[in-house]
Image (cartoon, rainbow, N blue to C red):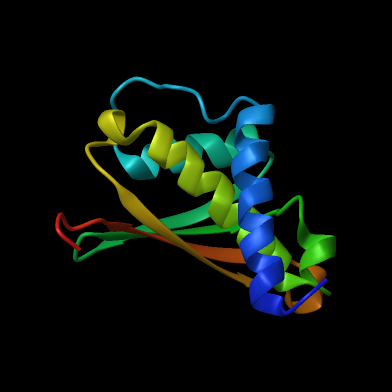
Length: 127
C-alpha cells in the first residue's frame, strides 16, 4: 500500500532481510565489488548480461530476473527488493570490496522481461 516511493522503501527493507535469510549477506573473501554483485546475483538465479565500468561506477545489466512477473505491475517493489538485497550484501562486505558503495536499480519490465541496470557508485568519505 501507500505511494510508490513508500512501497519501494519498504521493499528495500524486505530485500535486506532476504539477503540474510538466503545467506547471500555473508562475509566473503576480498574481491572487487562488481565480482561480488555478479556472484550474488548468480546465486539468486539472475543471469548477468554485461558489466560496464566507467569513471569509478559499475553498471551491471541482468536478465532472467526471478521477479519479472512482479516487475510488470509493481516495478518499484522489484527496484526496492533488488536495491536492498545488493546494498546489504555490499555493506556486510565493505572491507572485502574496499569500501562503501551506493546501489541504484532501474528495472525495465517491458514485455514481461526484466532487465535491470544496477549502478554501483563508490561512496566518497565526508559525503
